[in-house]
Image (cartoon, rainbow, N blue to C red; front, side, top):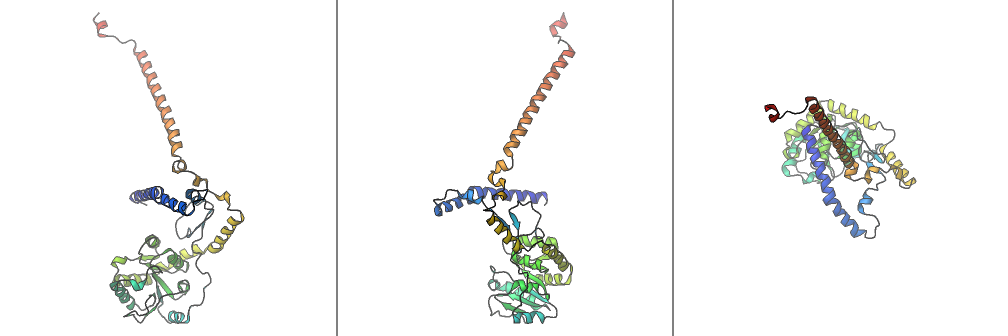
Length: 334
């Protein structure tokens, strides 16, 4: 990050820390005490007692981080490693497209049927102009003006669709689960993020060269069509996402198998207390050694100051001795 980005990052982290310590966590403690009045431990103590943390990411999909031993990366454990047959109608629709298929889904929280009319019309105009067929997760079976090359349904077996070799790209909201599935199956994607982590996921995709970001507020038929044609026309998007897929797939065991192993490991060893990180038992000042730094360097500064003062004093005495006794004006007259 640039200096400006790091300053903003530090400011946001500081705000989050203060918000948690002085507002959010005290509120959680109140709720905890209301429903568990007889608990011998506080919510703060229980909060530090996580025996295992399963992280829904992987270093190949994110950034290298210095995890403690009970933090285990299991990103993509929801992905079905064995492809199941698609429904007959969907399989026929995909196989019948000579120019490939585009899969379009805004997930479960954002319903395409609830998009503003002008947004839906812009999307349909863009999709109608394509020679590819499109599977569009649309929750209303009565989509007026639906293009002939578009197949709509309120549900699709997304994992198995992305695994199909005739599917060329994915139009998504940029959610973590969807982007992880797309990377696993080696399909580049166009993201229209709406909220939350979707913006971060798409920023990483764009930075890594296998994604194109579109602004939902300013989306037009021309912008969507251009993004699709750019991605289909430039092989670099597919090449880069397949390279990332290879890195992600190259693991000693599947994420779900690893998650199961560690859950059972913690259970076998009665909570695996030996994995507990001592840093959780320290407050902010102790964790960052602020008190030790102040005492150590404060003490060193005091010692250095005393030594410099003594040197200055001794040097002054030496200079006065070398110069001899000082002659006053009265002595000069005589």
